[in-house]
Length: 326
Ligand code: COA
Image 1 (cartoon, helix red, strand yellow):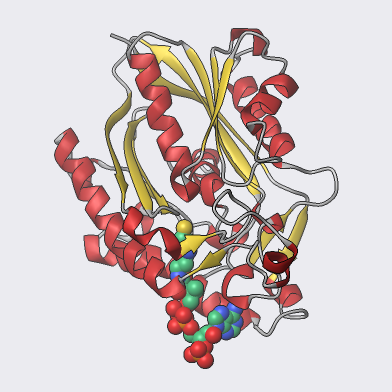
Image 2 (cartoon, protein in one colour; image 1 turned 135 degrees about the vertical axis):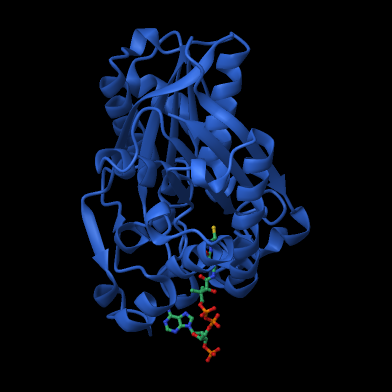
C-alpha cells in the first residue's frame, strides 16, 4: 500500500498588485466597502506575458524543486483551472511542454474554485492504486481576464495566481485520510459565464450585452458557502474518525473573510485554527487553497505529521474537502 505524501510546494503570483483604492478610481466602490464586506485589501492581476500556463509552470517548477523531483521523473501533471490560456487545447499540455516533462501525462480539472482540492484527491487516489509515483497538482487562475471591470458586484472580489504541490508515493501512512466531493447543479446559474460556451456562443450581441463575463449571484453563493464549510468539515471528521481537536489547521477557500468567520463560528473553531489570507489576494478560485496551503507551510503554522483540513467550494455549485496527514 502506497500513500500520497506532499513533499513540495510553491506559488507564483503576477507582479502587478491592484489595490481597492485603484479599483475605486474606475468603478463605483470604495476601499471601505470592499474591506467591510469581504476582507479583501488587494489582489494580483496579470500583465502582458503572464498567463495561466506560465503561472502554473512557475508554481509547478517551485514545488518540484522543493521536493527534489526533476521533469523526467514526473508521471502526471494535474492542472485545476477555469481560466485556461485557450478553451482548446488543455492548458495542462502547455504546462507539460514548458516543464519539459516529456514522459508525463497531463490533464486539466475544471471544477471552479473547488478544482485544486479535487485534483489533490485525484492525485492521492492515483498513488494509492499504485498507478503513479510522482504527481504535481497545480491550482491556477487568470480570472482578471474573465471579469467585467465595469461590474462592481464581481470585479472587486477576484485575483490571479497559482500554487502547486508535489505528491509522491510513500510507504509511511500519510496523505488524504478522508475526502468529500459534492455538487448541486440545480444552482448552476449562480456563478456563470452566460456566453462563450457552446450553448450561447459569443456573438457581437452577447459581447455588447456584456454576457461574455463572469456573472454571480453573490447572496445565493454566500448562503451556500457558509453552510457547506461546516457540513464538509463534519463529514471529513466522520469519515476519518478524527475530531476538531486533532486538526492543526483548517484551510478554507479564500472567497470572503466574512464567509470564513461565519462558518468558523458555526463550528466553534478559534481564529488560530483557521487560515485566512484573502486580504492579500482576493478570491483566486482554484489557486486559493494551494496558495493558502503554501503560505501556512512557509509560516511554519503546519508541519510534517500535522492534520490539515482543506475545504473548497464554487461554481457548479460544487464543494470538496480533504483531510490531509502531512
Ligand atoms: N461596492 C459598493 N457597493 C457594492 C459593491 C461594491 N463593490 N458590490 C455590491 N454593492 C452594493 C449592492 O449594489 C447593494 O446595493 P443596493 O442595496 O443598493 O442594491 C449593496 O452593496 C449590498 O449588496 P449585497 O449583495 O447585500 O452585499 P453583501 O453584503 O451580500 O456582499 C458580496 C456582497 C458579493 C461581497 C457577498 O454576497 C459575497 O461575498 N458573496 C459570495 C461571493 C463569493 O464568494 N463568490 C465566489 C464563490 S467561489
